[in-house]
Amino acid sequence: AWQVSPAMAEDEAMTRAAARNWSGIEWRRIPVESNGIDNLSRAGPDAEGRNSYIARFTVRSPAARTSTMRFGFSDEVRIFLNGRPVFAGSDVQGSRDYRFLGIVGFWDSLFLPLDAGANEIVFVVTDATNGGTAAAARFAPDLGLTLE
Image (cartoon, rainbow, N blue to C red):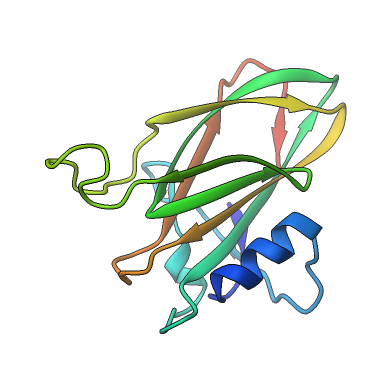
């Protein structure tokens, strides 16, 4: 499950994620679907000018190490690890090639330098077309990591 904010303006979501400013946000716990993807739109409706969601979870690691996170999103994402930006990408329809439908899959990977203990992973996901907003993340099951 992810903790997901209500829809907000992209600039506000980016500023909050970079500063780890969560004051006043009413988080909703949204469980992932059977395919591992979380429908962020279930946190509430988006509207003109408010088409970004902040989705976050915590990874606990028994030791400092680099771990691979496979992930997907729709349509655009900025990913932060402990308040530091580590990825920006776009999966809008046609962005990979003219046949790409903008579907969510585990197409991308990040090598995350995790600290021992709690690590906060934050996705700022934006869909300006109001076609559905989603995020997905997974780690190899044998790394001793705990997801919260």
